[in-house]
Image (cartoon, rainbow, N blue to C red; front, top):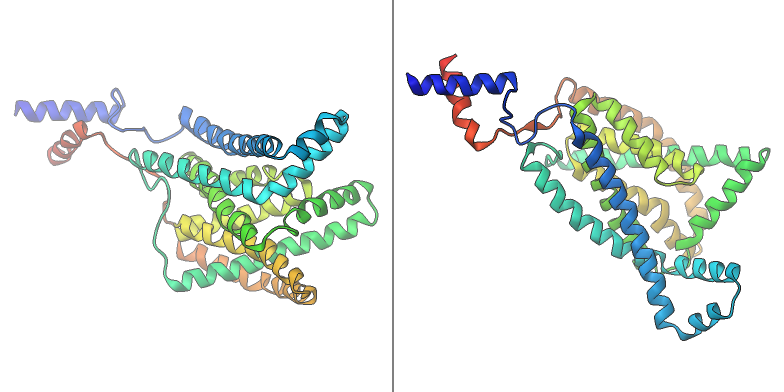
Amino acid sequence: MQNNQEYRRDFTNYQEKETNPYYRKPGFDAGTILWPLLGIVFFFGTMFLAQVAGLVFAILSDPVLRSSIENADPLEVVTTLANVQVQQFSVVAIVYSIVQIIALIFFLRFREKREKRYVLKEQAEGKTYLSTTVITFGSLGIAMAWMFLIYLLAQVSKFWFEQMEIYEQMSSITSNENVLITIISVCVLVPIAEELVFRGLVLSELRRVMPDWVGVIVTAVIFGIAHMNPIQSVYAAVCGIMFGLVYIWTESIYQSIFMHIIFNFLGSGLNQILLKFGLEEAGQYLTYFYLVMIIPTIYLLIKLRNKNRGKSTKPIAIVRPEFEEAEAHAEVIS
């Protein structure tokens, strides 16, 4: 009886939160802000450091480059280094993406020891991958529709004309690079790293304290802003909503990663391949195809939503070992 009273007292404390039986209590806490913030800082910090390291390596290993900037004025130095950075883009992206992926996997596994379902990782059936592929086509269609609108705005607005020029310069970065390097970096590693940061970390924290749909939108806005260019930011935010909804409704980060990889491959890698073989016209037909696929995309999203209506995807707090026995006895007593 004395032992039962002790267990009852422990469980009462647990219910009244006088003591914390969890590795992490449910609800808002400092980590709700801290972990996403640190994740985003880490994401951009590794990108910056990798780019700086790439420039330093290029200067030290290339006597011609070193000589050209030693005798140049500041503006010429900046221009020269910017060109070097463009040439190194895909290789540098491989380096920082690998660092990000490894670090994030370790961090997310650490979080999962304190909260079950911190990252949703359900294994999906083959038909789910098919649905995700169709939704990716529709997402590309939305991006193409946005680009068409920007093209029209650029005819009448100086701001959008200038933004279109900047966007085209950014898009041409990978056009002259090795196709395989582009696919490995932009189409595989970068999407994995971005999904682990934005869906795996940021959205996981937000869905602890807010409805899934709010967390998806907030994460998508952050994801869009992270792309910095106004044109790319808008369609990245819209696609971020798609990635987030697929992640939540399939309960699988593997699906959002798969979707992101396909999106980047069709939007970047495939275009580079078509240009290489002089098949630009095929790219135009693909644009029409993506636009048409917006309709089945809407249907599939509604179907996924209805299938998962009412399910909770919130992380589940894990009770510390020393409280597990107390909780079990308290349930028996009650």
